[in-house]
Length: 447
Image (cartoon, rainbow, N blue to C red):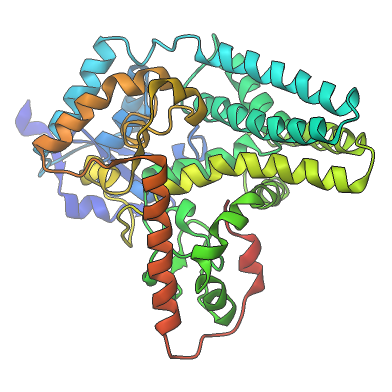
């Protein structure tokens, strides 16, 4: 009977947002996920960031229909008394339901197979160029091709981290470790840890790790207040060293991107050897060991040190296009301070992302992630479907007067450099002395 239901208010739900006491609401039903957070496949960060509020839109975005049947064991017996659904959320859920009925989430095409085949073919060419050719130009071309290989392999790792791209979960995990750890040297465990937090708290200065690049970059002057990173659990100090670097960040952006992979390698090692709980730590370490076996051996086969340096730098430089692309999608978008709010999921994603417009024949190059907003709204949607749903997302944004920004690659670069330059000039205008220098922050930035 309706009268027998037990209710709590949204204000009461907010009180259950700390470790050991984590409650969430999904479609008005309240669940206790305090213990489940340790087993959650997506890690603890998404739940910790969203606990104490309604998370229906985020749950729909990240979970297949089969996940709903698992919720009952977490039900507290309470319902949210003041549960309301905004018009934006209502339309978003309707659109997600329509995509599900159309089978878009399950229709993945052959993108992964083609990409892995292309990666294997490129790897053979790289091996031939290094081992069989003596020309310095062949070695340079091999290095550049390796950078392109890393880009395409990373897209497979990204896709397999969001949804099952293979026939089984076991094969999917293999694809993750192969395309991520073994081929690129970047741990899929590290990627999941940071990437899920990024999606949930898109463009939150203190919760989204993909914007926390102090002391090298600051996309907003709000970083000048030495914000505390809730992701890393430490203060992002804006000291003299950080101010100096940020004053010139619009000049250093591209050079830093060319060596950004070094930081990603370091972040992988720091996580895998940390005390933090890491899913499949042993498998991740084995995959990284594979990379650090074949890559140095391949470089050592080149005839001299100048060519070895050229090979490594050329591969890094080509792959920097991907690092730049990810920055373009968010650096120039709107930012905010504070935790994500489950009640404005659609609004936060539209506010914090930029799309990059390109011809359909270039979809392979950008890995489908030029449709960044579409991907953020429907992260389980295979990349081959993103261009198809783009007009529907545009219509929904227009209906609710929300931003949909699609720029050319050149325009997106201009917007990003303008954002960095604005913050750099603001840093130069500060007259107060900066606090003490913390050089350790330099290695805790992301590429």
